[in-house]
Amino acid sequence: MIPTSRRIFAVCLLVVSILFLTVSLPGCDEAPGSGSIDGVELGLHLRLHLENLARQADDLDSEHLSRARALFNRPPQGLDSLRIYTARTTLEDDALDLRVALLPLQGEFAGGFLAVAVGADGAVYRSRLWGTPAFDADPESVWENFWRQFEYRRTRTVIDPSSALADSAVDQFWMRLQADSSQDLGVQALYAHGRQMLANSLLIRRTMALTGRGEVPEPSWYQHYIDAFTHLDTTAEHLQPLIGEDAVSQYRSVTSEALALLTPLVSHARAGDAGKARSAILKFRRRTCVTCHNIEDHALGEGGVRDALMAVFKDRGMRRDLYRVGYDVWPVPGEEAASQEIASAIKAILFVLGQS
Image (tube, rainbow, N blue to C red; front, side, top):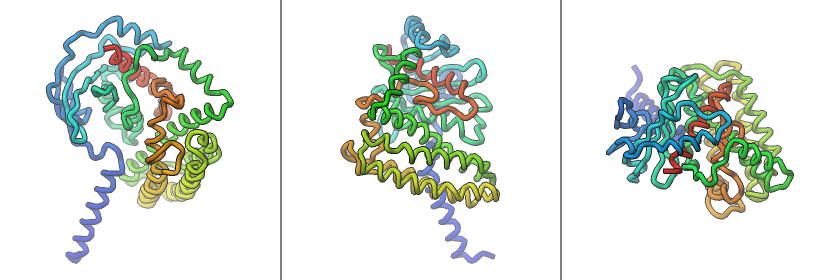
């Protein structure tokens, strides 16, 4: 029989481990929500307690929907079925008035739903997908990683119709960024860095999901990330016009440590050692993600470099309303077309909400 002291220690260690994972992985600390309407458990899927949930009093303006479709070479399917609800909720101790857009999906994801919730400030507080095996099972957390990018730190907002870019204008904007000025290189680097950080989020999510079942990702997958961080290190100088020389130096220190921490994961994957892979990925997150986000010796003012950069995105020419895979949207690997379809639907929804 295990001595009482050892049993107590084991229980304490388990509790600490659970608490660590709760604060480390986004979404794990969300309580189940409540609030249903029109046969849809909207609060449950948004992980919000929705009060005073009601259909928006005014019907959607058909002209608004037509303008939304006109933004795209290939408009999202099913916009005529878009529903808008109003609700009140509490998030992080703040009372919020929300508008919640619900779009029944068609085509590949027929039977599924896309929901986007925005606050009175216009920021996106929730974006969720559910209702199909791909979304609901999601055994490697790839779709969760996809939809969470649109609600990340509320950097996405409703789209002002006067400044919205149609697909052709998005292409022109991106082509202008190919100029060789240091400023444009910095903005390109920011877009690339943003996509890589979302890929890093999948690196953590997928490793945790698989190792939780005693499995390990394939070694080549970790090698891909090693190659990506090598590229980040070699292109870090492009960020210097934005964040300054000292911050770039610290950034490179982080990428070097990331490479050192990722290399053993290839060996753990070859050996099929889920326990060591899990420990290694948690160490990677602590030592690289958190450290990089909190770099303070930058040229953008006070606070960590991540929040400082987000505060100046617009002023520095980085748009967050392109909704284009490979630009400001990270796609689910192997599902680029489907990812674009959903990203376009989110853009259309935010454009409609921006007109009302």
